[in-house]
Length: 379
Image 1 (cartoon, helix red, strand yellow):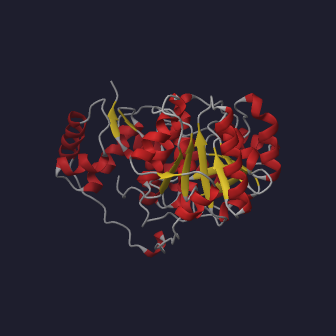
Image 2 (tube, helix red, strand yellow; image 1 turned 90 degrees about the horizontal axis):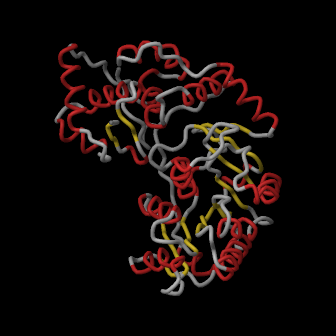
């Protein structure tokens, strides 16, 4: 199998017909197909329809017997649920797809959206923090969101209890985006049902997960990367050192965007994460004006379209060479995450050859790919 993994300089063409959009989602929902593999296969075969046609043979060549793509009945049910929830499918490259989210590593190929899509074209700031927030922390989050909204910014958060809830409430009339961990039609926590319904009417709810999916712990780190990806900056209001809010802050730093934090009392564990961020260089926030003053102008580079790029030449490898590289990859991977580029560099083999076999290993379930494209071997 040939083709390079997705990169910001090689964007795929967006699907333009309903059949193409259906195929995109069907491929994305198929077993063993994560975001990185999705883009790689799309680049290799040109369209999701082509990939779906070839995928069983590709899986068989990787040693997976009886591989079947995601069923049409299951996908029909998802589209039916989306229609009932008034959810719209956004695919990478669509006009409404948020520009800032396009620039993150391996952005979501598809998002379900409920509400006002125009909010995605406005400058946004993420506000995140503790679920067990203090009264002062909640008041601060509400005030920041309200004042940033009045200044023209959309507030992005995760619809969790505590700081997220207060941030959404503060920006409800001016514009807020809730990125959900489960399906966009599943409200979690249940206590935020009224708020979520109001956001669906006045703001926007987003999720990359299938309709009807109940959120699990593993869904929230990927959710956090979307929050960081939409915002120009992330403001942390009360967060422990080991918390999802600091994961969002790290994602923001990895994107080269501004991280800010509200200071708190040193004896309050809920403030330890924010205080640590400030110690390490995050902008100290006392009010919304501190956030606005720290925001730099952002320019998005023009990127060539996939159709303007020549297709990569096919690689010719013997079965013996392929098997040898297959084993070398497995020998080098452990349960500890390893960056893909480091693996390629260590193997001293052409990147296209390595990535082709990595796709086979993902499909066969022998390796996992985590956030940021890190690889680990299943035990």
